[in-house]
Amino acid sequence: MTDSTEACEGRCTCGNVRYRISSRPLVVHCCHCRWCQRESGASYALNALIETDRLTVVDGMPEKVMLPSNSGKGQAVLRCPDCRVALWSHYGGGGDRLAFIRVGTLDAPDDYPPDVHIYTESKQPWVVIPDKVPAFPQYYRGSDVWSAESLERRKRLFD
Image (cartoon, rainbow, N blue to C red; front, side):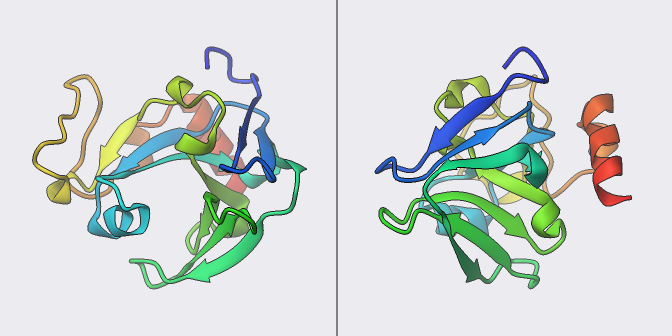
């Protein structure tokens, strides 16, 4: 996405649940932790973080499923009730104010490359991280990666 106000839509596999994000995400995480590897069944999870008030369900009704999380605070995963695809999550720390959109469910996932790779201490050894993309063994400080606009949006969200 080239414009911070550009909207994008996404959907589950069967198409019964469609959603729209109304702006560019705050940041896109590529998480290599073992928890995300297990939960996704892949080498990492790719999530676009966005304020929940910028996320609108266009069609259908996702089902909220509560799951444990590595932090111990739990997570709410919003899934299609028919095909069961996970569309986004809300984690304990951000509550319902922040949604972690599964980038692969967006109609234009190529527009959302990772801004940062996290928990690289447990990444699969054959995954190659581009030199120009920040990478951290664990988590990071937002000011090290996030744009000034995203930091301001986050501040408004949690003040």
